[in-house]
Length: 429
Image 1 (spheres, rainbow, N blue to C red):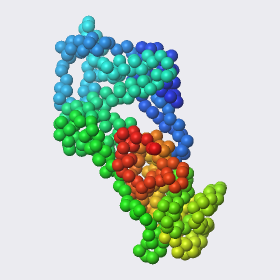
Image 2 (image 1 turned 90 degrees about the horizontal axis):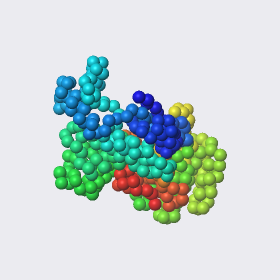
Image 3 (image 1 turned 60 degrees about the horizontal axis):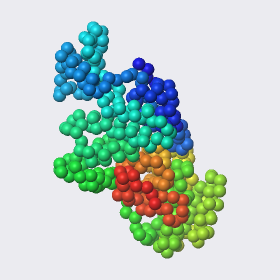
Image 4 (image 1 turned 90 degrees about the vertical axis):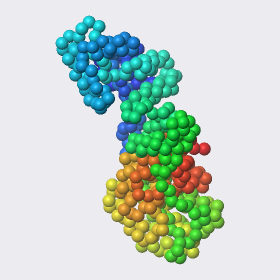
């Protein structure tokens, strides 16, 4: 038996190489998507990895007959009392004993690895694809094959999972929702609904959406900005890693406050490190018709806020910092201490990988972030990462941005809307 692994940029390319080397009779053992390279989630490349074998499996009917014959020569396995891993281990041992002793004619040890039955047929159907244009069917078949694996493993406990509930579970997995969150949601819905309700796809979907939305804490957003209780303008600072869209988001908020609510708004930026960053914000300020102050030291920050004390709100754009750069983060803390913001929003890009988002939240958190803004939802591939991060960081969702247009592509964070992105595959627009 030959086992080989193929990695390529697309499933079609990987399948083509597989078929060329192993032939159309090859059997797929596993498929997965990998993301490699990049820095802090940027520039990562996606690859498809397929592992296949040349081993020829017996037809399902023949395999069942042989397995039945084997049961007469080998001790029975107590499948009700042993875990799946133990069963697999014992089956392998039985097979080795038969091979070593020489199995009787017509008796073959049961297969303990590799796809069998309908899963084997699906795998062969994928390899037998004739044209690159069949990629969608190939991916659908792969998903179905994975689904059968999950259905088998999930049904090992208290009976098989109802179809509508299992479909929701698969959608959560496809959206990259963390397995512990998905398990909790599906388990809670299964306990909540009755037998008849669990067979109703609409009822199940609504129940899963409610549970999913509960994982996204949000903060109340006032329809109109007013001066803070201490008499100062409501001061809002946006902080976060480089390239997440802080400057554009500041401009969107400023335009919303000024053009939609008629408030007096002042802008302050300490992002003097990035080329043309100040010019970009100054252009926005001129278009909106508001004052902009550029500061380079914490002392200048305090003076700029005093100069804008007649405004209803002051929005502060900060320079992006690498989450691991302790010195730069300490400098940023100096600017924030001078500004004394009433709100500190951590800005994170929804296109970044989950580990990068968690690291940013952990390192920027000590600076006093009490809210989070997820940007670039229009560029996100999967929304499950938002659920995973929002449910674990000690901040509440304030806004999301959905494009580059100022001020249109910003909206208050809505758990229900994000939950539908995750579960229903809804796109922005």
